[in-house]
Length: 368
Ligand SMILES: *Cc1c(COP(=O)(O)O)cnc(C)c1O
Image (cartoon, rainbow, N blue to C red; front, top):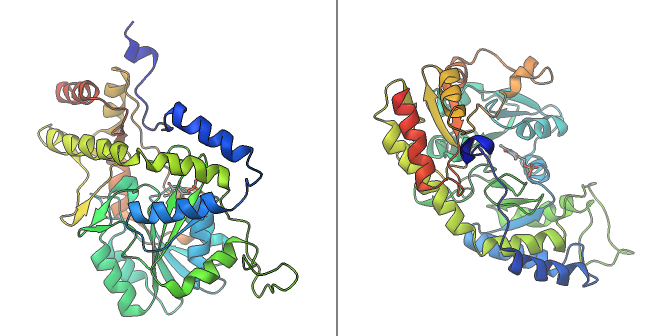
């Protein structure tokens, strides 16, 4: 029995900073008497923003919480609509419904899995508050076209970058073209703080309200006996403990993301030559960060079985959200999504995929 069979190469994997760096830092913060939101959180926000090119980054308890706040800032609420994708993890859409807004599912491009600008344009109404775009699997969507639609109709553009930390579009860091952007620091994303999120904001004028919505509607720094809640907020703040993990992660995350990208580009080159399989299309302006690799196969079941036989996890990973009863009423025909999902197979492309692993994957797929 080979080791690859006893422990398959996973599709996703938790990355922790080196124990000898993390444990002393964690011990220090845990016994510091300041475990809630404080200086470690603010330092983490500042360094995360610097490292990933975000002018304003607010740390939250989850990517979901960050997205909830981003949606509220865009005006999403009862009587309004948010144009969104079904080809995503469920939190993108559960949180739209939690604002009271109606999700409007627009079709995706069959070769990228990302929102089709033409479908988004066709879905705009006078009730539209925002477009919520997901850079699915780490592949940037057509941000130039979506930004133009948002500007033309004066609606918000929210980037769900939960899969796309470290990606770029038109030379710009992902998350800086939308009015807001969210990142997830949940266990299996590129970078984790166990749980956590980041809200990036383009307009500095929204920062205060965003911070209030993160903390019950209260303003930090104003004495509790004088502060006034105008709009009830949530408990979406990050703690010094998780921020300490985040600070340690920032020291080594660039190398890990570079390895995702290197593996992704390798698969893009090598898969192009294999019959019956093609890589997901990467837009000319896009530099994906390949959280998971997306290939499109004439027969996706066969590809999954072929890789299972050599001890490599491969799957569709997600369920189009409109397959859920809660979202089904908001979806019309989506031929682009149907075509994408039928052919979709994700294969591992993360930092744990070594040169031999990726060659083994290509060899197995080439043999068929
Ligand atoms: C993970 C994820 C989220 C939510 O992030 P959490 O940090 O788990 O709350 C949102 N959108 C997408 C596309 C995700 O994959």
